[in-house]
Amino acid sequence: MSAQPDLLYSEDEEALRSAVRDLLTDHCDAASVLARVESDEPHDRALWKNLAESMGLAGLLVPEARGGQGATHREVAVVLEELGRAVAPVPYLTSAVIATEALLGCDGDEAATLLAALASGRTVGALAVPLSATPGRDFTDVRVEGGALTGRVTGVADAAVADVFLVPTQSGLFAVDAADVSVEPQTSFDRTRPLAAVTFEGAAGRLLADTAAPAVRRALRAGAGLLASEQLGGADWLLTETVRYTRERNQFNRPVGSFQALKHRLAQLWLEVVNARAAARNAADALATGSDDTDIAVAVAQAYVAPVAVRAAEEALQLHGGIGMTWEHPIHLYLKRAKSASIALGSAGRHREELAELVDLRAP
Image 1: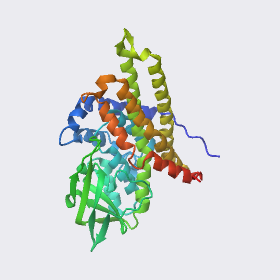
Image 2 (image 1 turned 90 degrees about the horizontal axis):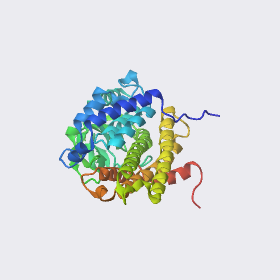
Image 3 (image 1 turned 120 degrees about the vertical axis):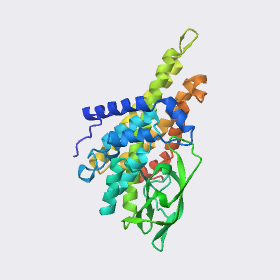
Image 4 (image 1 turned 90 degrees about the vertical axis):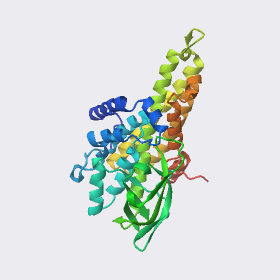
């Protein structure tokens, strides 16, 4: 019988959390994020440099021998929780997790060189698939013709700041420099993680793997599992902030948080967030240990955590009353992030279907 996973945070993980939260408190306050998403450059490049280069967080998943920090998915999950709490507009999930995991699934010098570049934080990578893509999907948007890549992929997250694209085709997985493609911004519901259409017109590609499917599946599975930690971070911030507000906001000469109806709603939300934490931590631990149940853990995490994050944002918006509806309050950023993340890397319904297949409980 395998040992039960320890889902509690270790001292090192708590120290990492503290360091990341301190940085985000100083460089990623709500007013700054609000101002940035209203500008033409929603990504915070200075913050990314601090996170990726100065703190070395871009290479957490990369072994030391390959130029990284040699940490695990558990540490990455802690970083993503804090980024979710701040709705930080940085390409951490797309570059340090998804693109990095894809490269970890490739052999050869080209993949090794690119992996070290991503681990340094000085190069940003993006897997050229729609943000809504799910593990196991067949990607045929880009084809290889005469040794060059041609096609168009829409809904690619953080494409605007990518230096290199990892492009799955039926002929293998290729690396294409951003200078060789056309990136067209698309209208994005969540401006903290903007989307774009990427067009390949005879672009030169460097072969990373003869078969793209294994590396892409690995990348999307890790991305879905760790996205749950980002969603958890946002939900936790929303709960904490809403409890604080209802304690301070008075109505009829008493705090609105003392009303029984609101107490019940917040208690229910607290219970859901606690359960979401367990699901997200379990997915991160399964990825870190290479558990045989990793697919199940990831499916459970996304099926449960994504709806909780959306519910936390909706409850926070309502319980903040009028101020919650204003553009100046950051709640709408969390609502948009939660809504867009709920269909990223597979919807909750899609993950429930996958879970049913995995545990042999298919619908009649």
